[in-house]
Image (cartoon, rainbow, N blue to C red; front, top):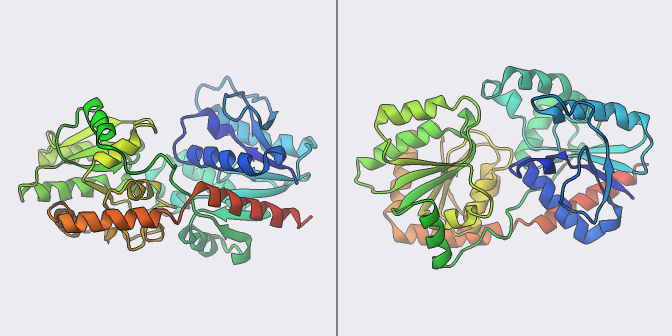
Length: 374
C-alpha cells in the first residue's frame, strides 16, 4: 500500500493546514516510512529521507499564488500519468476535484466556512469553493473530517453519507507545555511584555470576532483590571473594523499587536498570559485553545461550532455575540486564583486526549480501509 500525500503546503510558512500536513507526515514517517511518498512542485529541506515525486508547476511564473494553478494542473497530470501509488491523500479542501483513474482518493476537510460565512472571504475564493468543493467530495473514496461538527456540516449541506466521513481530531505540538520561569521571562523581554496580559492568537479577520473581544476588554477596564490584551497573528481579510473599534473605545494603550509570531515563541507566550480568550464565531477544529490548555493557560472560548469538542469541561465557554457574558467571565477568571488554577489543571489533562501520534495512526487505518476497496 503506497500513499502519496500532496505536500505543497510545506513550501509555505507552517500555519493552519501546513502544521497539520507537517505533523501528519512527521508521525507517519516514524510508522511506515517506506510507503509514504510526498507529491510537490518544488524541493524543500523537510523530510529528505521520504520518497518524493516532483511535478513541475507550469504556472510558477504567476505573480500571485501559483500553487492554485498547480492544483488545477495536478488533476490533469494524475489522470494522464500512471504513478506507482495506490492512494492519493489531498489535505486541501478542493485541490483534487476530479475522480482519479489510477488511484483511490482521500481528502481532508477542515470546515465549510466559505459556505457558512462567505462575507469573510474574497469573492473569487467563494466562487472557486462553490464550483469545486462538491465535486471534490463526490469524487473522493473517503473524507477525513477534523471534527464531528464539520462532519455534520458536510452531511447537512452536501448530503454526504455518514459512512464516507471519518472524524480524526488534530493535536497541539509537544513543545506546547508548561515552561520554566526563565523561559517565560525571556519571551516577555523579547516582546517587551512587562505587564500582566490576556492573549489572543489567530488571524485578524471577521470570523474571529475580535471587535467583541475588544468591547469586553473595554468593560473590564471599568473594573480597574490592569491587564492589557496581546493580539498575536497576521492580518487576514477585512480587519479594519478591529482598529476602528480600538480607536472608538480609546484602547490604543491597552492593545498590543505582535504580528506573526514564529512557532518557537508561541508556547512561552501562552505560558506568560494569565488568560487566553478565543471568541471565534466558527472553527473547524480550533487549535489555539488546545495549545493554550496544553500550556496550562486558562481558556475562555465560544460555545459554537467545534470548540466545545476541543475544550470540553476544561475551559469556560460563552456566547461569542454576548459581550457582557464574555467580559464577566474574563473578570471572574482574572480576579479568582482558584478558578485560574482549576482551569489550568483541567486544561492540561484534557489536552492529553489529543496527540499527533494518535492522529497519524487513525489516518493509517483510513488508508488501509480505502486500500481494501480495490
